[in-house]
Length: 296
Image (cartoon, rainbow, N blue to C red):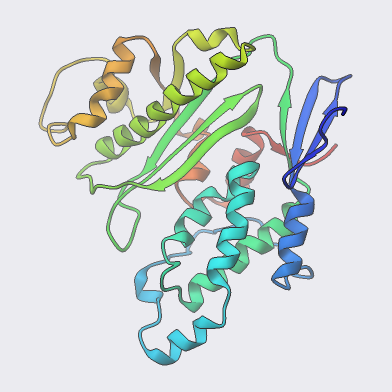
């Protein structure tokens, strides 16, 4: 049958001489843009930019505006773009996660933001998720949160991204399920989300039998020093006594040497685009570092 070159909307490119694998959804993106009459749209530098604020106050407040939105394919666009995000484009995870909160009653501002995501994809449809040969093949994770960023609930956003062979292999951007009183607790819950994914990844990658380092503790990078300290000791204090018991599984996995929480400077936090809006230049640099690059 030969090597696969196209699987469910994902194009696969191999360069055996350079030992590089690339994944692209350019054709699928073009299909989505055509479906929603955005093929000729201008591009934008980022899916969400500084100053963009979204909330339920932008949802229709009367029947006239509700009827206006009934003719706009908001949920359909978000659903089509979600497949791109899940497969090869972690760079739009935060934007889609934000816009997905308003699918039950979207407003015009939400729709404009959705079109901005399509405009961003128009300008970046050539980006490929790249994996490079390396002598040190290991899984590493970056975990982060944005404290109380949701204007509607004041809940925080969690985000993580796992890298292997210099490219992203697993990622998530999600609104936390509880309201936290401090940045430290929001960051610790984000580490819990990443730790839960570590367990699944370890099991899956072990079955592939290609990453020997998977049996060593997986590094989880966090830019909050209090979280790093809290994960390595069993002391409790006023700053952490409100943390739910289930989140303390992070400590357990550290003690069992399944993971190790490492501090990293915030400027090196690769997961930043998963949890908040960044300036265009900073955003582009972060996208490069997760393995999304333009063709050579």
